Picture 1 (cartoon, helix red, strand yellow):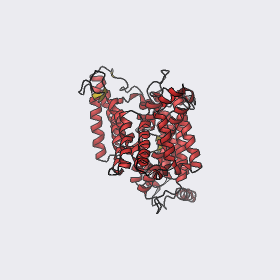
Picture 2 (tube, one colour):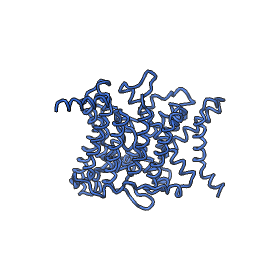
Picture 3 (spheres, one colour):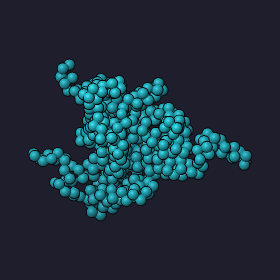
Picture 4 (cartoon, one colour):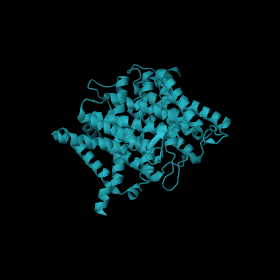
Length: 472
């Protein structure tokens, strides 16, 4: 018996290279728990972001979205650990789910199955590009400053979503008034907004004290506060039906799995060929740049890069990540991608795929807590969005602000995302401006062909009204 156990341990050690990378099984398990705690907030946020009605008035049931979010994260993260053998965890990408909810569904008028069809298609296309090694070539054509600006812009976009959900930023309609304002009538009002403020201060306090799971703790604490406020001061109606602890952990019902395979490629008919292709292209761009930067950054943090700054077997990481995008769409929980929060587990010593396997296992266990999604009000989750936005904005320090050829396109990329409520608009403005400045300065040769192709596609996107007028 002892020999059998020893053999299994040697097999586990050898497969994941635990000793070779200076770790232990215990360390890997602890690192996995840490990573899960730092990114488990997505189980609460994803159902909230994917919560609005589509053009048919259909909404995605929150418990089912939470179940699918946990299932997709569990499957893809275990695949990352077992196949790529890196301590990288995956889940529904913040920012990418914003594209699905606010751009594809609300902006382009797609149904939820059609929007998820866009996700599935872009994931499959990226997988093909990875297998043909085309993805690396595309990545190399985009200046690092623009890749950095995309992440920062998404951070601002997520921040304004959180502030709007909390009621801190509201729109105005009075003639001569600014388009947005602070709270209601220019001042903060209402108990729900107060819950957001308390929750935000709590999450900030937890974050600066380096408390693991700060976002999750903050969401849960804010939900408890919202429930108390709801019952004591608002007669159970101030937060709608959200802030009531009527749901408990239970074995998931068949309805929780009803979203599996609920996607459609009918978005081509709804949007038209050009707009549909651009939608897939835009979502694909976000997946491209986010994953490549995250993988290299996490690899550097873990000390796993080679002497030339490359991550060994990066193709396996990209293959899993690309397939994960399609899996997320097929399960109606949006594109799954590699999470930068994996750095928390790496900081706790995680160096191998065993860390990811532990994270994936914990996500699968989370399926049993799907009903909890109903008790988290927007104001309790919004503080986490604001802090995540801050963390993503930290990348702006890597932009060379003294180089106008890069800084100006990066600036437009960043500001147009929140100001127009569209990630596509920000990326397009940055690409077009970058190419325009280079050509205007007689440096057309410095722009790679793929950037010209991307900029041309975005020109068509921005001029779609005139294109329709001409051809119709």
